[in-house]
Amino acid sequence: MMALNFQAPKHEKLLMGRKKNCTVRLGDVSKQYPESSLVWVTTGAKFEPKKKLFIAYLDKVQVKSMMELTSEDLDHQNPDINTREDLIADFENIYKKRITMEDTVTVIYFSEVL
Image 1 (cartoon, rainbow, N blue to C red):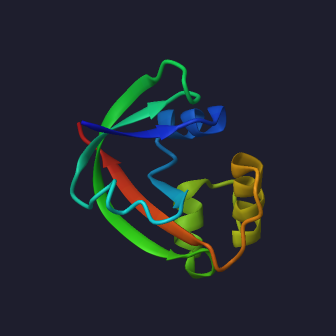
Image 2 (cartoon, helix red, strand yellow):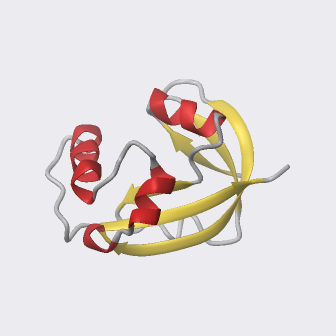
């Protein structure tokens, strides 16, 4: 089974509180995460053990530019991120590179399988 991993501790809190049901990933990762797939939702830093949180169903996978992200995408990704500029700043911190409104992202909506 595939995993949808979240490295930041803030994401684990949002996932555990069921306040996050979407992730925005840099680049086109739609082939790695096809719509209607089942994935483990996990947390943990690269090269370290991961914690399994739950199994999720990938409801919707969309490839778009950073500019095309909607307020709904941002809200479901992280309620603390209100603008695309906030997300770009967060991504630049994570990826350690310059991100622009033209960059491609993949938006993945998921729901927990009970």
